[in-house]
Amino acid sequence: MLGHSYGTTVVGLSAAEGRTLDADTVVMVASPGAGVDSARDLSLTGVPDGQQYQHVFSTRAENDPTPLYENLPGWIPGADRHNEDPTETEFGGQVFTSDPGTSWPVVEYSFPSHSEYWEPGSTSLVNMGHIIAGNPGKVTYE
Figure 1 (cartoon, rainbow, N blue to C red):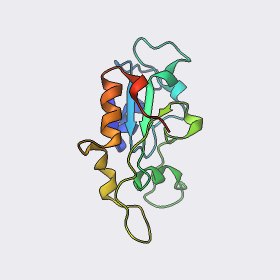
Figure 2: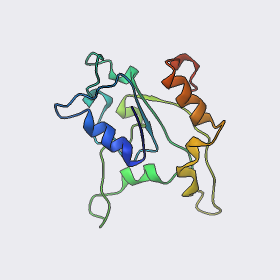
Figure 3: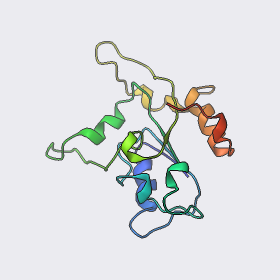
Figure 4: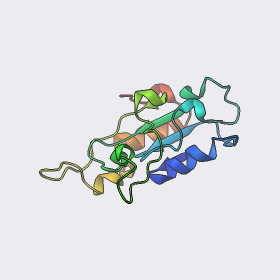
């Protein structure tokens, strides 16, 4: 199961709180928060408890602003936190590399970088292909 942006929150919540996602691998791209605190909170078909980290992959581009939303305090109007960023060490998944994405002068972050994970030949797309094909040994990791 692959989720991009808020789709990662949907994927995470679909596999949590007593629900099991009918998938044995999860890929989370540019997540504002996975909807859970840890890969251990996810229930995946055929994946024994405690081994979820081997089946959860995530990435974020250096210049993509979306993963920053997870760090916004809850008291900011319009800021909706969605638990942990799955690229954080504490989450417990496997983090694969992506190209940094387009950089804007001064702020560096750019909105176009949020969609550049799908560019033909990009590091993220190649890595996702390896994950989907069941070849995690060919994936480049952070």
